[in-house]
Length: 368
Image (cartoon, rainbow, N blue to C red; front, side, top):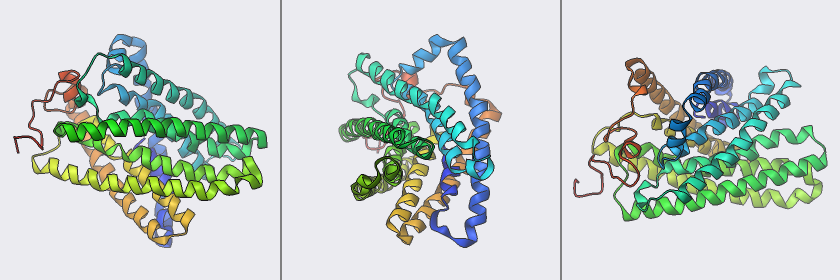
């Protein structure tokens, strides 16, 4: 997801700077190819684990910290569908692009709905009372369902008006599922952050995930409004302004959340380093989603300043992606990628168990 979103954003050519047009195209091609390769390299062992070790996989899914991360599997499939829609027409035969999107949608959309239902059911039935288990990872199932409208929009031209109306309805329905779940999780995380000390340092990247639903939600509204005329004809005229207002409001919250996330990360770093964990990839896709929304709104509003902001966010995303990739490769080479961390590491909450605070000092407590 974190690599594919770079391909999508670069393909939109944020800022539309003539000197960077060629570089943006090259970056989109390279990121798209790498995202496809990673989907195979990571997807096969992921599925293999469910087949060979289902008990362990179910145990992870029931964990309040690790469980929502399973949403990244259908999320990755849907991001690949979006990559196919944006980069595909430039490298694939024209007739092949819709087929690729349809296949990826047919797999990713049911899985996205399933993970949102299963994880919610498990949360409802787990016996835990401590609100400290609430974390930013809980935004992953909602953001995956919000991606659905983005990957339905490219199919509008391939169907007739009645089919387009069905796709438009489905897109808004999935957007509603993801957005309302996002609000519910946001309220829980907000209360958890106020009533308790900050999460353990290893959980710091999860606080960035809030950018994902806000960014994808805004971009999805813009995409749906652009394609609505194919489904509704002249009746779609009212959808554009409403969607633009809603998308802009969501973007504003996403931008505010980015500033808060940066402030909290600075606070964490003030008390020491943030230990590497696979959760570091939480820095990438959410920021990419906000960058995509910024680029989409720059075109929708015809505001060059937003395009320049999108270009700056893409530069920040590239720096973070390079840093996270380097750290990941180091962990693979030295073997720590395959070891579940202890109390001070990336899986602190999962290792300690639901409701058990990390033994590491937490910013905001007497340890200050």
